[in-house]
Structure formats: C-alpha cells, structure tokens
Length: 253
Image (cartoon, rainbow, N blue to C red):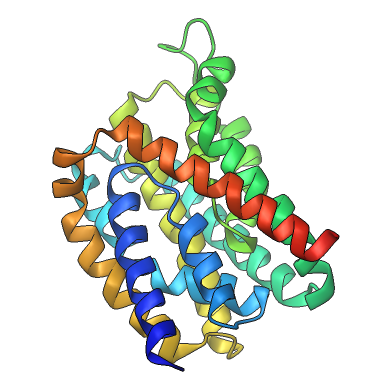
C-alpha cells in the first residue's frame, strides 16, 4: 500500500465519520475509497462496514436515553436485526464477484435516492394519525428485509428503518432515531462478525480508515457549526450521483 492510497483512505475516513455524525451517508464515500485502493467490491463493502463501527457505537451511546423500555418486543427487534444482518452478510459472501460488481452502480444509486428523498419517503409512509398507530407485527416483518439489506450493503439502511417506524410505530422522532441507531448497529455488527470470521476484511486499509473515521466523528459537530446541514446533504447526494455514473460507465459500458 502506497502513501497516497493510505492518505486517501484516511481522508475518506475523516470525511465519512464527520458526515455520518451530522447527516449520514458515509458509505457513499468509504466504499468508493476502498475500491480506489484496489480492493474487490465485496472486500471493499465488508471493510467499509468495519471502518464505520465508531459511528455506529457513538450513535447508540448518544441516544441511549431516548430508547423505549427494553421489553420483550424490543429485544425481538434486536434479534431480528442481528439475524437479518447475518443473513445479508452471508448472501454477500455467496454473491459471485462478477455479479456484485454489476450490482455496484445499482446499489450506490439506490442508496443515493433513499438518502436524497428520505424526508419525502417518511412523510409519504407516515399514517395520517400516527399518535396511536402501533403495529409491532408489521414492524417486525418489514424489519427482516431491511436488516438483510443492511448486512448486504448497508448504505441507506437508517433511512429505511425510519420509514418503517413511520409506518408502524407511534414513536417520537428522537425515540425512532434511537431505535434506528440500535437496530442498525445490531445488523452491522452481526455482519461484521461474519466478515471477520471469513477473512474478507483488508485490515491494513481498514485500520487506516477507521482511525480517520474516529477523528471525523469527533469533528462532525464542528463541521455542522461551519457548514449548514443542507449543504452537507447536497454534497453527499452529488457525490452519490457521481459515483453511480462512474461505476455504471466502468462496469456496464
């Protein structure tokens, strides 16, 4: 690994960690950086999940007081997220490199669209009277494919979870966000355990990016004080669109 690649990974980690702290969408930066470093798409995806673990942990800890009571229903949600994340990771490892390579532009494009229209998606799916709208079974059923997607690729999973909660729960926004952080972390960590066990993590590159992500996570609040969150979201969307076009040209044409 050359110094310029190491610097690229470190910078992508800082940028991804900072953006995750204020707007989300870090995978749209970390995944292409690993690809640029020469990793295969599957190794890049798995390594990106590990590199972003500080963001998952800080998200859970920062909103832990907003979580609802840890009753049987919430534990079941966690178990579904863990199982779904594990299934997604296994499906990723079973996907031939050529197939996943062809899927990369679609996955990045889908994640970008989900991120770009997150507010519209949640508004569209929110019931007219959400104050008493609580359907735990529907929430658990829709959590299954969402968690599987999270283990398989992950980008945009947070928005998908918030949309699920808008449809199926009466939770306030901060409560829904806290549950989203918890379940998203559970799915991601389950996938990471499988990735590590199967030896698909590129550790030297991942550690460099992880260190950058830790720094970026701590500086995210300062970034928000300098740059409006709307501009940050636009930057993430623009980069997602650019990466979609780049990989579509590279792998499809």
